[in-house]
Structure formats: C-alpha cells, structure tokens
Length: 220
Image 1: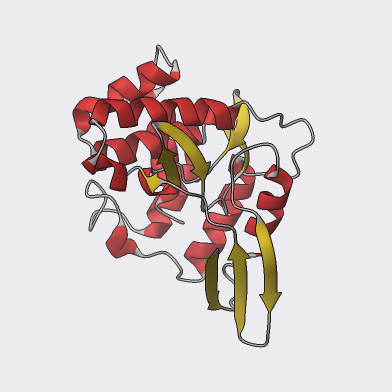
Image 2: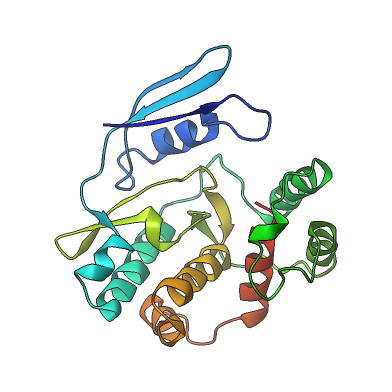
C-alpha cells in the first residue's frame, strides 16, 4: 500500500484524484483507492501500490530508446480511453481559470520556471500570453495532465501503471505530448524527443501547441 498525506488547503485536495482513480478502475492500470479521510487539519489517501519502477529508475536498466518506446505506447493506451462519459474537464477554459486563481493568489513558484523563462517572464505575463494565444482543441482525448517519466511505472518491459493523476481529464492530446516530450528531453536528452513523437504516431508535430501547453504548465 501507499499512503499520501498533506495539510488541508484551498488550493489542492486529494478529492479530485480519488474521483479520477475510481472512474478509471478497470479502464487503466492505476492505483486502487483503499481509503480517503479528511480530518480538521490533514487529508489521508491510502492506495494500492503498483509494482515496477518509474521510468527514471528504469534508466539504469533499459536503453533510453526502449523507455521512449514504452512511454509512447503507454500514452497511446491512455489516449484510447473512451471520453464520451468522462466527467473530468481539463480543457483550456478550465485550465485558464485554475491558472488565473494560482496567479491571483501568489501560488505560482516563479523560481521553478523552465530555463527559457526563468527571470524573464512573470506568472502574470505568462497568463496574459496564454489568454491571448490560446490554441484550438481539435483532438480531445483522456489526458494524464502530467505525463512525465516519474509518473509512469514499468515492469517486465511493459507499462504496468500510471500514477499521480490529479490533473487528468478531457483535454487536447498535445497537453500530454508537450509535457511528455519535455520530460524525455530533460531526463533522456534532446535526441529522443523526436523519436517519441514518431513512436507515438505524430508525423507533423504542432510546435505552437507544444509551446503553449509547456507554457501553461508553468502556472501549476
């Protein structure tokens, strides 16, 4: 089992992740919710453990090319989930509202921005850019929302589970493609980013969407 606990706050609660995990039961290999409790000061979320190693840990075992292949394959599986009855909205309108709340309440850690924006853009400037350059959402899927190497578990040379799904819901597939390719670039090297797109099946990468969703991620 795996226990997650944190202080109760207005900004973030485990409640949404609980709903997502229960909805995904039997649809994807995700942790099972054993118990979720809130008291006057803390939240407690008890989950079943998924066996395997995350993709960062697997770098010491598998070749980088194999990890990229598994990441792409896992993302295709996630994006194949039927969204016709999905109750979780993570499209741009909803994300911009959440981003605006974070900015207005000084909840954005500007010291953690990507290098290309660190010390150059403020959170308010990023929000304004996002509002003025919003991208079309013409390829909706069930998206993880934070599809990066630490959140994908591998066992026996296959994807064995997905974790940390608190930002999951219906979104354009580029939401995941942007975060995943950035994580690959950071952990495995820039040479593997294009390989990931090829394995996933994107022939003509929309660079504007990639840039947009990476920019959006700065505010969360």
